[in-house]
Image (cartoon, rainbow, N blue to C red; front, top):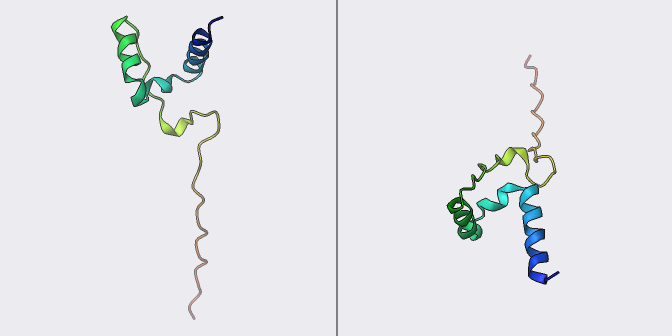
Length: 71
C-alpha cells in the first residue's frame, strides 16, 4: 500500500477515536472540506471529560488550619 494511504488511514483511525482532533486550528482546511461534503463535525468535548483517556486532573486542596480555641 502506498505510504500516503497508510498515513491517511492512521489519521482517520485517530479521528474516529478522538473527534476533537478536527478542532485543531491547523486542520481548519480539512474541517471545512468535510463540511462542504455535508459532514457534520461533532462539537468539541469539554476539557473536564479528558480526551486522552486519562481522568482529568483535580487540584489538591490545602488542608485548612484547625481553629484555635481562645480562653
